Length: 418
Ligand code: EPU
View 1: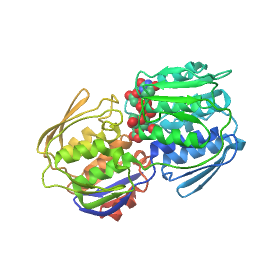
View 2: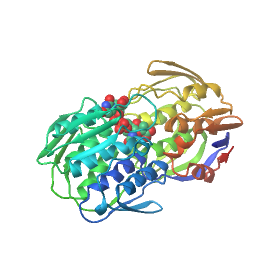
View 3: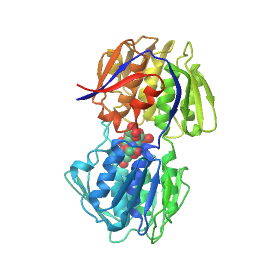
View 4: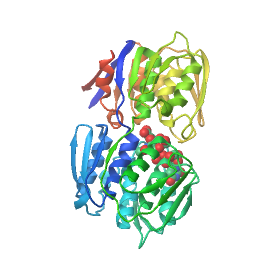
């Protein structure tokens, strides 16, 4: 079994370079199959297990996939519309983007319910509602979805919740539909803009991405293109939180500062020293942290994906902080482990109340999901003594070269086989 062993208390300085966004890449790779002619080249793709699995699915479907470090070249010419094995589909959440992409290309898809972190129920009803509005019929057999359309046509689709996945999946299915589709109450996350730009580079006609109304005028053909993945705002935010705890002029480089403004404004409110440049920030830990109240929201609100590492920061605050999770029902799985390390956090429904400051002590903890894992790495870096984190596959799904990146700035962290 592989574990991470971290000895806390080291000051971190130097530069951490942020990789391409996981949540963009995992949609761009499936979207590539929509190209009717020419290769698709996507660069700045992080080397993490989630992007590896998606490349495996593409290869399984018959695409020629060539990967050279952070670039991936996909020739979709020889793709066949085959059912993706359940085992592959369940290895990550983003396998569901093959639903929209295969439906958009072939008018038919057979897919299993996706996997991903256990942080709540995570239904896909809004994706299915979108496909139905575009003219598809849906049959559900056990865990398998058979989605079929004689012809996809444009439609007006209102999303009850501004879902990232549903917005992207509907864009993928609608991009070649006959007529115009309008998604109302669309998600506004930067990843949506990145995917829409990619599809437009392929010849699609999408406007309004990044606002709550996305308009897609269907086109008959799409071609390959060259595209760059945006920097990962959640990786950037995670390392910024770490810098706020143990950073001494720690530079977080290759970021889009506007994408993490909800975090940086909270950090400033807490007394963290930040210098924000055009594509970087420099963070210093303060001697005292003011307590905060934070609520997760859809973009541009505070991202749920940073809630778990942010909770660790609250353990350092002078007094009572509250953290409210509004996006998922079950994203507090890191808290029992933080309490085991010495934190004093009470959970009541969707609110965690953190009483600080409390020193943390190293012990054995388990990464129950990706961002819980990021929170435990963060906690281990400030804890007294050694922390052993198990179930680290979750962490490696989403953070490229995390051990190397932290080691390079002075952390004592090792991946060990026990
Ligand atoms: N929801 C529904 N029905 C749907 C779709 C979503 O009820 O059809 C609910 C979900 O259950 C959840 C909420 O709406 O409670 C938000 O879901 P959303 O669809 O926006 O999220 P997602 O597409 O499943 C992506 C990221 C998540 C990130 C969220 C929110 C990927 C692969 N995943 O998930 O990333 O938390 O958007 O920003 O892009 C992570 O990286 O750790 C992660 C979980």
